[in-house]
Image (cartoon, rainbow, N blue to C red):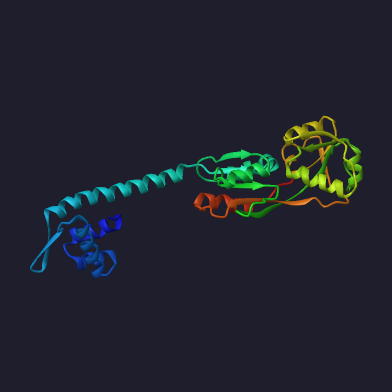
Length: 289
């Protein structure tokens, strides 16, 4: 017995004929007859008696009709309840550290529905959470490695030298990487994709960076720059609303352009609210710091 069989059975009960039931359900009359025959065979009873040209439901049919109506009513209730849960369930969004500091809040502020749950961590942790369905989607600054995840570049970014406004670097058109390497550097922690990219470039150029601080908190790095502990290589979007006393200067001989990518599992069902988040990511534009 299936819910569809119950629908067909009740259509016959309510219309009084297999032909009318077939027309109501937009299926063939033999299909209706087949369903009724299968039900009668399954339960070992007759559900209808044909007297002349009319069908009459049997007592056994009346009993089954009662159960069928309750079953279909319960399905409708489940559909309504699950639809309500889908509307009320917050999205689970991942963000890497820089994205979490300067992009994700602005995106989620525009997202309709209940507030999303957010996890900020490095790319490796976010990737694992996506793979185990603990996150619905994520916006990351690093490269996603798993082939089970689909990553789409959506937001262009570039690392710049962040220094105090009274620094000798401030106001210059650009600063060579060698000069930056010789200054006290305040860098992201080892294991982050930003730090890995910087270490790779310093090594390729044969430069030994003077690392004064290592930190997984970009706000702490900006505060340390502001207090004169050194300079940093960070996204200028971090200065939005927090750039007082700081300057952003291009690296003259190195292109640190990168992309923030939105990532989802390749088998993830993209519902209405998740689609809205993905569209917001694709449309987001940074403001000047």
